[in-house]
Length: 248
Image (cartoon, rainbow, N blue to C red):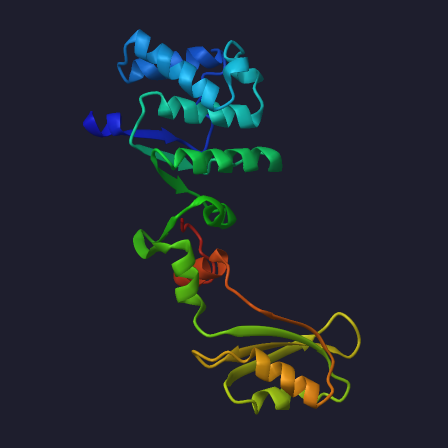
């Protein structure tokens, strides 16, 4: 009972009573937590105002938009002011505008509550979470801030270099440069264009050396940028190639 009083939960699937109004859904949730009527009313007023649902408080839940339904689910989970809020796939089925609204809401909720977000949408994790836990086959394989996790997994510097290489000289030139560990290539979109992926030795910054080498050989550089790993890359690396059944 004490644990239930400390947590609020929203599932991936809609768990609203569609035939009740917004405020009736809130009252029902409050009564499940054995709250008094005055406390339910005060909490309902506060949350509906905070979540932008005040204008639809007497509307039947079935008639709400997807974004409003998701907000109402979160409001129900917060009715008793829990310390911990668990959100399972909170933006599933929402349109892009609603997704942005819910993500901003989660950030705001994080100022007062500990929000634990479970999702396979890793761009969402990157956008709203301060700390990431990655589970694989029931075991914790990573626990760190998003920033530190990406830094730790990125390792050596990786450069994408798009050049116009008429004489196919660039690959050997790159392999001979100090600090270069690995070079791979693929055709560019236009004729004579080649895209190289150049990996530096750990701790080396090879961007300036690449620029000077191309300038010396008069090979036009069309594009050069550092390649960084996404959270998806890190996830797949830690959980295996398919990542089936895994969760962040």
